[in-house]
Image (tube, rainbow, N blue to C red; front, side, top):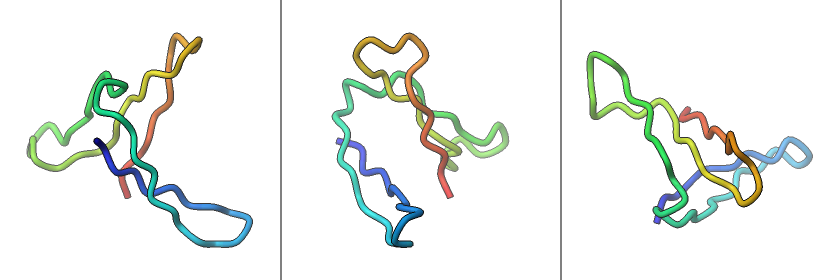
Length: 56
């Protein structure tokens, strides 16, 4: 499972969403530090490109 922090602009609160690891197609990392995640590409049914979750 991947935990994704999802900010809600309507109320200013952040929510944690759990995404199955099987739906993550790629993890973008800093080229100079592979342990520093920049974001995640999530596959979604019917969406060829998927969704990009940017790390804060």
